[in-house]
Length: 460
Image 1: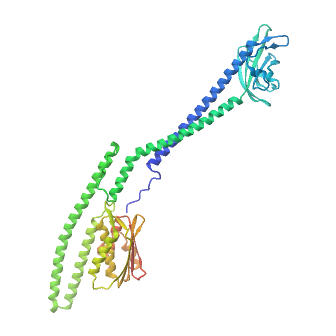
Image 2: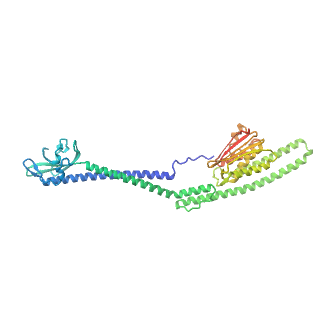
Image 3: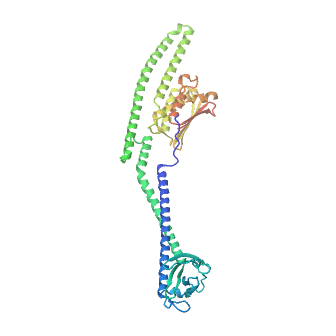
C-alpha cells in the first residue's frame, strides 16, 4: 500500500485569509500609530503657537509702572477669570514675580521649571509643569530686555492641558472606531474577493469529485489561463486511463478465452478417458482424478491472476455509483441455482440505500467470491448483511462451515498472496476479495461466525 501523504492543516483559501488578515492588522495598526503620533504632534505645535501668541499679546499691552508692570487692556478675557485655564506672569531677571494675571491668583510657581532657568532675550522656552490645584499645565516663557527699565524680564503664559487631552482622546476614539469599521469592511471585502478568485479552483475540485463518482467523463468547464493546462492534462489522463482499462479488459478477455479453451479440451479428454476406464486399474483412476483436480485448480488460478492484473493499487477507480443490493440479489439467485442440490438456509439483511463507488464488475467479483465460498463450505446456513456506513459500504458474510483456522487468517489476508499456494479448503475467492478491497483502499477481516463457521467483514 502506498504511503499516506499527510494532509495540509490549512486550505489554500484559509492560508490566504490568514496572510492578508495579518497584513491588514499590521498595516492598520501601523497607520493608526502614525496618525495618532502625527495628531499629537500637531496638537502640541498648535498649543505652542497659541501660547506664543498670548505672550505677544501680553507684550503688546504691558506698560511699566512704579511697582512693576501694568496691563490695562487684556484682549483675552480668560486672563481676568480665576482658574480659567489661562494664566499670565512677568518675572524679572532674578526670577521675582512682578505681575500675574487675575486668573492666576492661586497658582503656585515654586515648583515651576522656568523659575531656575534663564531665558535669553528674544528666545522662547516651552515646557510643562504639574500644579496641585490646576493640574497639568503647558507654558511658554519668552525672554525680553526692557530698555526703559534697563532690565531683562520673562513673559510667561500657562494653559491647562485638559482641553487638548480631551481633544486627543476624542480623536483616538474616532480613529479606533473608523479603523475598526474599515478593518471589518476590508475583511469582508477580502473574503468575498478571495472566494470569487478561488471559485475556479472550487469548481475544478467539484468536477473532479463528479468524475470520481462517475457522474461525468471529463472536465467540461472553461477555466482561467492558469488552470487550463491542469484541466487539459487531467482530461488527457482520464482518457488515457479509460483507454488503458478498456485495452486491458479486451486483451485479458482474449487471453482468458485462449487459455480456457485448451483447458476445456483437456478436461473433456479426461472425462472421456474416465468413462472408458471401467476395466482400468484403480491406480489409473486415482491419477485421472488428480489430473481433473489440477485442471480445475489451473482454471481458478488463471481467473484469479487475470482479475488481479486489471487492477492497479496506485490509481483511483473512475467508476460509477452502483446500487449494491441488486448486485447481491443477482449473485445469490445465480448461486442458488448452482448449489440447487445443497439445502441452504439464507438469512438476508440488505439496506436498499447501500451504494458502491466503483466498477460494478469489481463489486460483483467481490460479492461473488465471498458468497461462493460461503455456499461451497457451509453446512446448511448463511447470513448476508449489506449496509451503508457513512459514505461507504459494509458487507458481512457468515456461514456455519468449518471456518478458517486462526493461525491462517493473517496469512490469507496478505495482499498479493499467490493463489496457487492457498491451502485446500480455503478457496481462491478470498484472495481475490482481498485484492479488490486493497485496490479500493478498504478493509477486510476474518473472524468466527456465531453460526460456527467463517465470518468475513468488508468495509469499502
